[in-house]
Image 1: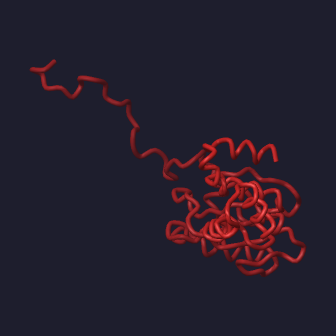
Image 2: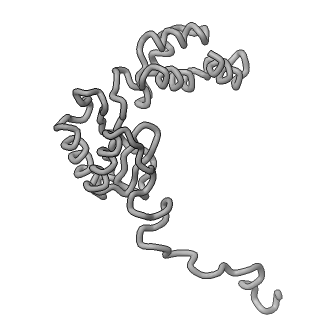
Image 3: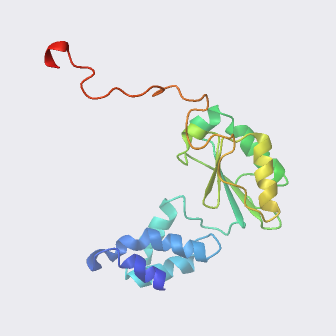
Length: 193
């Protein structure tokens, strides 16, 4: 409740309804990763708004899960940049490694749920997937298996690019800004120096 009140305080009192998205996120995190009708009703009551308004938000945004999910929520991006870099193979690898489940399903032990999603915003590091709140990028079928096996053992592999690059730099290395930049006045014509 303290955290919810801190969120509500970020908004002027007449606009406290604007806290609905962060409160839905908080409620979902406290409800094992999904937004139940009870969570939505509680938030509606807390924000003094019609429950239908909260339902509209929770059903519009794909970040809110309307059904229970597994302990490890695997979201595989299959938007064009990831698709061009092999996300179909990554999705197939995930599904096969998790016992042949299909997107939208959970493993029988409740450890994993996998879904196919649209862009997660890591296009330059495609293909990628998100597990929990962490991005796993530059995936291959082998690195995907390794990541899933670590989670299955209760470990958390290092998020980020799996190819060895540090962030989102070009995978071919530096191709621009490879020399010292020009200083002021170096482009001036002689008569203006």
